Structures are given as C-alpha cells and as structure tokens.
Image (cartoon, rainbow, N blue to C red; front, side, top):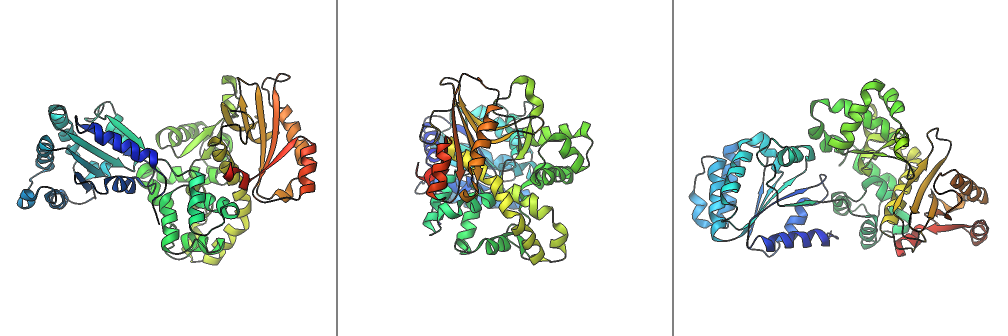
Length: 477
C-alpha cells in the first residue's frame, strides 16, 4: 500500500533537519501505536545519507548496545570493531560524530530505555547541555506510550525536562484520506466509508493489513471475522496491546470503565453504577482517562456555560477501541470457548446501531474540514452536539457563529429512506430548545445520510426548511 498524506508532518521534519545543519535540535514525536510514526520518519529519510535509526527494544543492555554499534558502523565503518561498555560510551561516540557532520538520529520507542537502562536519560541530558552549542544535527525520540513520554520530557523533576526544541504529534488520518485509500482499492467510499471508519478510524496500519490480506473487497462479516473473531484473529488482543502498558497494574479497573462507556453509558453516575465503582471514586479514574491517558474525552453541549459543567458526557476517542471494548472485551467468554460464530453474530446484529452513532462522528469530523460555508452555510466558531441535563432534548450536530449570529442544527441517519417530514419538524422543535441568542439568530437545518432518498421526500423536507446532505456531497465538497 502506498504512503498517504502526511505532507505537513514531512514538511515539519524537513524544517527541523534544515535548522539542525546550523544548530542541534532535540525533537520528540508522539502518537498512538499504529498511527505511522516510524513510517513517517522512514519516508522522510529516503535518500538521505545522514539518517541513523535505532529501535529501542526491551533487551539486555549488552545485546542492544552491540546492535546499536553495528548500525552506527554503517555510517562510521571505523567503529565496526568498537566495544561500547555502556550507553554512556555509545552516546558520547554519537555526539563526537555530530561535531564533524550533522546527522538525523532516531531512537524509536524511546520510552523503553526506562526498562533497559534508565540512566540514559541523565546521560543524554548531560551530553546535550555540554555539547548542544558545538554539535549539529537532530536527535529524534519517538514514543508510543504517551504517559511515559510525557513523564520523561515534561516531568519537571526529570533530567530531560525543558530540553526539547521541537515536537510533533502524529494524528490519525482524516476521513477524506480514508476515502482516498478505499477508492484506490476499488472500494466505493460513499457506500463503505462509514463501516471502515467505524472499525479502523484513520489508523494507517489497519488499512495496510487490509491490503496485505486482500480484504478490501471482502464482506463486513469476513473483515470482522478475520480481524476480531477467528482463533488468533489479527486484532483480537489489540485493546490490550495498546493500553496495558499505559495503564499498568490497574488496567482491569480502567478496562471495566471503558467497556461501560463503549456500551453506550456516557454519564458519570451511570458509568459508576454499571462498572461497580463507587460514584465518589469514579471521577478520579475518569479524570485520569481524560487528562493523563487521553483515551476518552469529556464533552459538553456546544452552548454550555460554566454553570452547566455537570452536563458533561464521556466518550472513547478512538474508533477501534470503541469497537474492541463494545464487542471483543465484553465477550471474552465467547472467545475463550472458541465460539467464533456466536461472537460474529452478536457483532453483526448490533453493528447497524453502532455504525449509526459512528456516522455522527464521521460527519462532524468532515464538517470540521469543510468550515468554509459550503455545507454549513456560514463559517462556524463552535461545533458539537447538544443535550439537556435530563436528556429530553438531544441534537447530533450544532454549529454556531457568534459573529454572524447564525446557528446550524443537524441530525444524522445512515439511511436517508428513514427521514420523514416528522423528523424535520422534530429537529426544528428541538432547535428551539437550544438556549443561544433566542429570538436573535439565523437558523439553518440539515439531515445527513449515507445513501439516497427519492426526490419527492427531499422536496417535502425542503418545504419544511430542512436540507438533505448525503455523504457523497460531503466527500465532494
């Protein structure tokens, strides 16, 4: 599969490398596992003769040092017979080389030094402080365990605190790029983007696996079975692989909370009740999942004031983790007894409901990239959802502009055939319940759907002042 997007990230690396020809830079690259951090650096390094890449695997220091020596010898053959007694010796050799010529040095999974040789952090800090004015080049530290990376570089008592000169956080691909990947593999993006986005979001590794196993043209059941349900399925343990190292010994507690949220409970009291955690304790764990681990987010109604903070709801940020906790972690018993069919049937029966919620996320993400008046008929300054504390009024998408005094209300359904005039009137009625500049605002309404609906139905909705926006229109906007 070809390399997609990342023009901004590549340009940022090029900028850092150019600056480092005059003075040294210490850069940190973070991002979720599988998001493509390593591939990004490799693509940037293509054709460069100053590139050195070291993967920090969890091995004995002696073994890892010998590996690093052999890699270093590819650039400095005289060091092929060198014997580094410690990482201190190795790093000193690196710094001496960069006094002669600039290098682009990458340490991948840098946080693993915490287990291999924690003294590396102090050694690097000492060498950096004493040599940063005389060396040239870039030292790049890539990390996937984001809690450890923040501790290493942002903890004010840590040796490397305050030493970073450049940062890059690699985010998942946006839906438009996912649609491009699908089109390149002869998959109808309009028809299938919601399914692929529900399962895999914008994580490049998963699309690489789809390509490698020739599954782009497979059915939904075949894809879900191959990735999640079969014995030794490719992603059956993905949630554990992604999060256990982040959470540590308390991972069971956090996993219970995430399972409840993925199951549809978003309010603190309900999450506490369903997870069996005291309501007075749950806020601590939710705050950690939001701020420290950044696995969930707390959302407020788009019009919420400071006095309305208690209306917050919690959502898993990552599509794959939402799917995994909703279906795979929840159904470990079926996996343990090898009931592949039972698990697959359970997923497929609920999938339309789950995809409907995911479709809202997809539409909101696409609107954020089209904030130019083409879909929402004004440039909005805020976008989100709306709900009352009692939950008697909920609107999927609300966007507004304080400057224009304009507000936009949107509802999302996978199937346009399910839209009726009653839906349009209900949306307008719910819009009146949104307490923002009442009586002094311009209102706009739309219904978002994946597929088509007949012209008569669309005209009837238009007569109510409600526009229909199909996924095809979003993709071409």
